[in-house]
Length: 243
Length: 297
Image 1: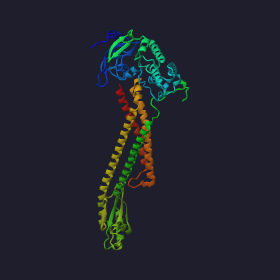
Image 2: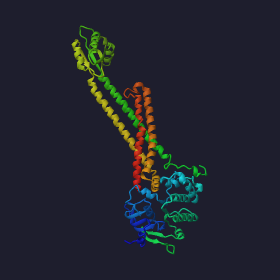
Image 3: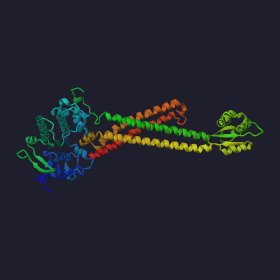
Image 4: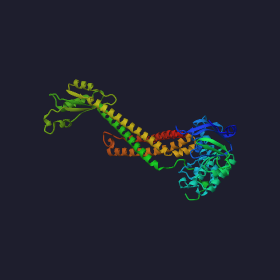
C-alpha cells in the first residue's frame, strides 16, 4: 500500500491537532470512499483539500468533525484517539471545531443572529458575554442589516456568510469549510479568505475543501490533493497552479 | 420585526420552533385517543358500580312465598310470616306485600282473560337482610316451619351466581377494553412523537454537530413533546369529563341508564390522563432522540 511521502514528517510533529494514520472510510457496505490516508495537521496550519467531485473531500472533513467514523486506521484529534474516546468526550471535541457545511445547515426557524449564537449557547456562554461579538462578526461578513432575517429569506451568498459566521464565532481550534466560496462573488470570496487567514494568524488550524483553484493560488497555502479517495499530494500547489 | 435590530435587546430563541403546523395533527390524534381512553375508564367504573349494585341487591334480599292453609286467610298467613321472619337473627325487615302486588307479578303469565280474584294467589313477603351478618334461607325456613307456615323461601341464589358471573365478565371486558385503548393511545402517542421528531432531524443534527450533549438534545424534545401530549391529554380528558357530567345530569343518580350509573366522583378518573400522556410522549421522545443521535454518531 502506497503511503503519503509527507506522512512520516507529519507524524513526527508533536503539535498535530489532526492526525490520520492509515485511515480508510466507507459508507455502509459501499466501496471505500477514503483509502489509507496518513497525514497530520500541525496546530496553526492552513491547508486546502482539493480534488475532483467524488474524490472524498467532504468525507475527509466529516471524519474530522466527527460526523463519520473510520472503517480502518487511527484518527487522532487534539492528541485523542477518537475511537477510544468516551462518548461523553466527543461533544467537547466537536465544540473545538467550527464547520462551514456545503449545504449550510442553518436552522430555518431561528433568526440569523440566533443561528450564529447556537455554538456559544451550546457551550454554555451567557448572552451578555457574546451578543456584541456576534453583532460585530455579522457586520464583518456583510450581514449587519440582516441580523433579524430568517434563513429562508436570505440569498445563497448571505446564507453562506451566515454559515461562516456561525462556524467562526466560537474561535474554534480547527476551522473546516466545505466549498465556502461556492455561492459568493469574487470580492466576497476574497473577504472570506482574508477572514480565514486572520483566524489562522490567531492560531486556528484551517482546512478548506474547495474547487476554487484561484482561491488556493491567491492564498499561497499548501494543499492536500485527493484522487479517488487517496491522498496523492500534500504540499505547495505546483507552479502551474495544479496539484 | 422591522429592519432595525438591536443586539442589546436580543434574547435567545428556543432551539425548537415554538409552534409547528405538524403539532396540530399530533394534538388532535392524541386528544381523540385520550378521550376514548377516558370514556372507557368511565364506562368501566359505571359498569363495575352497576354489577356491585346488582349483587348487593340479590344478596341483601329474599322473597318468601306464603301458601295459606285452609284455616286462615292469605292476608293473615302473610302477616304471620312477616312477623315471624322479622324476628329471625340477620333479618333487617320483613314486609308482606299486598295482594295487588302479587297479582301484578303473575299477571304477565296469565293475561287479561283470567280473573285473578278467583285464583288462590300466594302472598309474598319481601325480606331485607342485615348487611353485616345476613340470615340464610335455611334459618328462615326453619322459623317458618316452627310457626306452622307453609312457605317457600326464594333466596335468589339461582340468579345470584349467574348475575355475579355476568358482572365479573362485564368488569373484565371493560377493563380489557380500557387497557387496549390506553395501550393503543400510548402506542400512537409514541409513534406520532417519533414521526414529529424525525421531521426535526435537521435540528438534531445541527445541535449534535455543534457539540450539544446527547442528554441536552433529548431533553429539548422530551419537554416539547411532553407539553404537546399533556395539552392533548387535557383536551381529551376534559371532553370525556363533560360527556360524563352530561350523562350524570341527564340521568340523575342512575346516570343515563341504570345499566351504567355514573357518579360525580367517577369524573375524577380522567385527571391522570394528561400526566400519563405526557409521560408516554416524554419517554418516546427521549428514546427516539437518543436513537437518532446514536445513528448520527
